[in-house]
Amino acid sequence: MPQLRNILVAFVALALSACGVNTIPTAEENAKARWADVEAAFQERANLVPNLAAVAKGAAEQEKAILTGVVEARAKATSIQLSADDLTDPAKMAQFSAAQEQLSQSLAGFGRLLANFERYPELKSIANYQMLQSQLEGQENRIRITIRDYNQAVQQYNTTIRTFPNIIGAKLIYGAKPMATYKAATPGADVAPSLEGKI
Image 1 (spheres, rainbow, N blue to C red):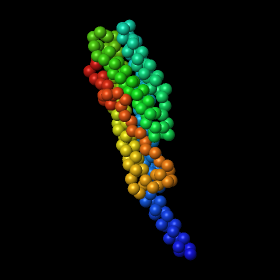
Image 2 (image 1 turned 90 degrees about the vertical axis):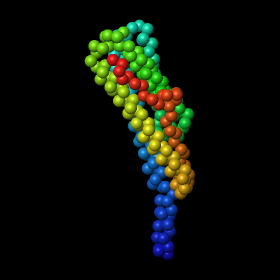
Image 3 (image 1 turned 45 degrees about the vertical axis):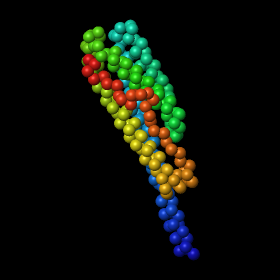
């Protein structure tokens, strides 16, 4: 009888391991960790916006609407929070994405404001402007990379929970739901705004 019990335990352990008992949570935690990277990248970009405000203080009155749009877009983007539990809700992902893309578009408008730097000689003389420009470009690239990594992790997780034999463990043990990928909310929003050559 003890030998039968050992065989049964070994069979159950093998069956469970074949059903993705360890694979599913590993893939899920990897996707959640990649999402944390995305959030951190967006937060770093949001943290740069106050520096934009300081740089643009010397801009003419009619351009202040662009600066106001950037500041308001930052406020909206940072007000929409998405927890790891919300990653299975496409509507919440779309809302978060729309707010972030609005900030991207506002930053692109700020770059266009500075494009004609002859009109803003006071900006040319600010030594920190070039550093800020480089930081913004680098941050947009980091955002793209973290979104790509997150989407790859989500694809791996979603594939894991939908393929045999992992689907058994996903449904019966975890009640796993597919996660939503990050999608650009506006056409062309997946392309980082370029500030290159604006000064």
